[in-house]
Image (cartoon, rainbow, N blue to C red; front, side, top):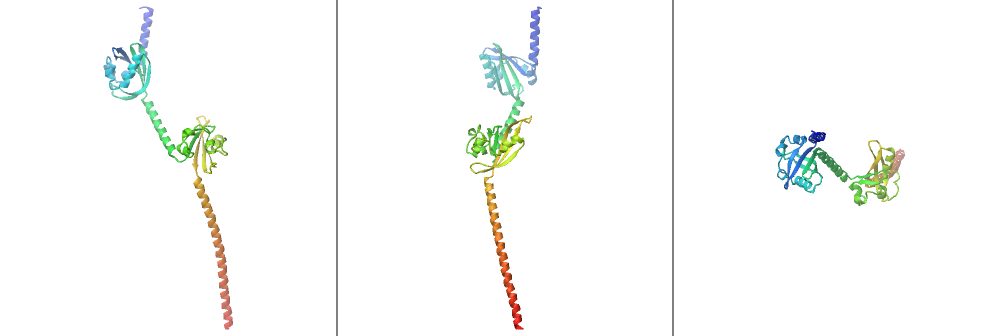
Length: 297
C-alpha cells in the first residue's frame, strides 16, 4: 500500500470514528430517483432509537415521514435546492414514538447525499416555556395592580410602565416609552424636586416621598434602585400610589374634629355659665329662707 493510500485509509478511519462518536444524532440520506433513502446513522442515533434505527436503513423518506410532512419538506428542500437548512421543530421518533423538540441541521455533503444532524433541545424549550409563563404571570399581575409601576434608566427615561401608569395620563405605552418620567407627570424638563428615584440612585436603597403634581393630585412615590450582580446601578423602579382622595378625607376629618372641639369648648362655657346661674339662684333661695326664719321669730 502506498503512503498516499495509507493516509487516505487513516483519514477515512478517523473520519468514521469522529462521525460515529458525535454526541448529536446523525442520519445520512441518498437521493434515489424522486425520493431519499436512509443509508447510515451514528452511535447517538442508535442509542436514542434503542437500536431500532437499523430496521429503517434502506427505506424511503416518503414512506417513513408520510405523517410528518414538515420533515419531508426540509429534506427535499435541502436535496433539491442544494442548500443547507437549520430548523427547530417538534419531532416524533418513528422508531420509539417519543416526541421531542429538536434543532435540525440539513447539510448537503455531496450532490446526492444529505446529512441530517439533530440536537435534543426539549429541556431548553421546556425551560423557555416555564420562563415565558412566569413572565406572563408577572405581566398580568403588574398590569392589574392599581399602583403605577414605571421602570426607568439612570436618566429617568421610561423603559416599561404598567396599565395603571398609562391610564393616569390617558395614554398607551407606545406614547410614553422613551420619554422622561418628569416630562409626563410633572410637565418639567428637569428631575422633580425631592424625587425618590433620584435619591435612591444616590443612597442605593429604597426611598419614599409624598409629591403633588401640577394638576393638584397627591402621590406617595417610592424609588427602588436596581443593581447588577456587582452592585452597579443599572435602573430604577418607581412605584406610585395616588392618595388625593385620602388626603381630602383627612382634611375634612381634621376640619370636623376642629369644629367638634370648638362646639365642645362652647358647650363647656355655656355649661359653666349655667352652673354659675343655678348656683346663684339656689343661693338666693337659701338666703330668702334664712330671712323668712328670722322674720317669724
